[in-house]
Image (tube, rainbow, N blue to C red; front, side, top):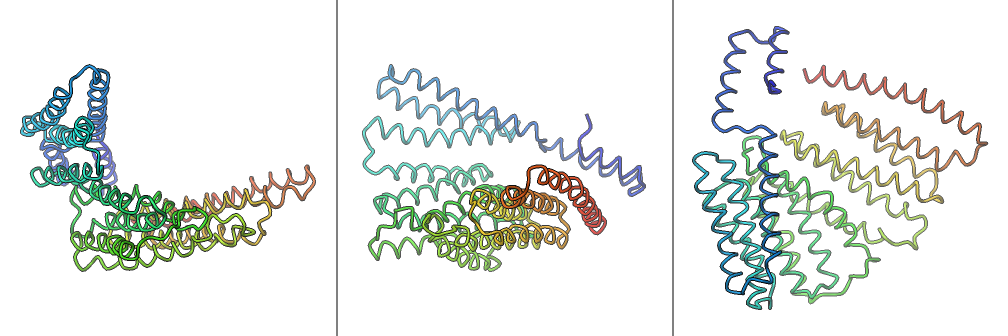
Length: 435
């Protein structure tokens, strides 16, 4: 079965966009790239799933016989697993580099299991964050020797995990730690998202950007909840400890951005201001005594949408698909969640529905401006959903049943036809402008 690039190349050749000589040169180049170690998606998925299955199988085997193994044998078994995976990676590196990367990743993950199991065997659980520190150190050493993206991602995940665990232990799980921790992790995810630039888009930077994109939306939700007064975690910390925590929360992401981008990392300052603004606006986010809650929360959703819009625009300016997708997903999620809140709040004033409608219209305009058809599709779908949900929650119960169904049918048929025509026209204009 021909690859996607081969089908695209044949289509271009048949359309007369490239001549036969250019087509053959492209085909030869891509073939050499594939022979030199390029991997298609099925191979990558096979390596990932195979690594997970192998790790799970070893873990289940060891767990099944754990009670029958002496403490000294347990410790030896843990060390043996770490050694076996790394040795297997070293032997497979000259023949299949991707398989070697998988083995080394399993070795580093086994190191973490070994550290915590050794702590359990020898009753060394006095300060459990030290185990994460040693695990992160092992990942950094692995990245120093191997320089591959998987070791870099493990180090990028384990290091903030260690710092977060140290902070939680130092604050005895009190309330102030959640605000500091959520804000710091949110800014760090934005720092990871900023890894790719116009000039630098290697595999490690792309992996960090993907990590930041995946973590961003959950961390925004965590930060919103953490700053709310209703959570009940707001216990005062010692002044010196809280100042130190805030310094790390802001300076660590700034340092990461500076290492990755140099002076071009100045947008992290705007991100820090946005994160603080989100925290301040979220103080009444879960306060059920405010009626209706949407009037209090509207600024939270709007602030989130504004931040995601800025992130997507930043990504479009630098050609970062990770930032563009994260910004688009977050922008849509902010207005979708707000729309769902309005549905469940039967007493919410009707005028509050104007905000999700305007938000989806802005999403369409954003897509037209930056020639992104997926934003146009998302905005049109969200606009239609908002109109339908508004009809069900605020209009339908005020009309006779037959009249309401007739209007609903007209809304679906006429409105859907008009919206689909508009969507196709905008998408066509966008594709023509990009061409």
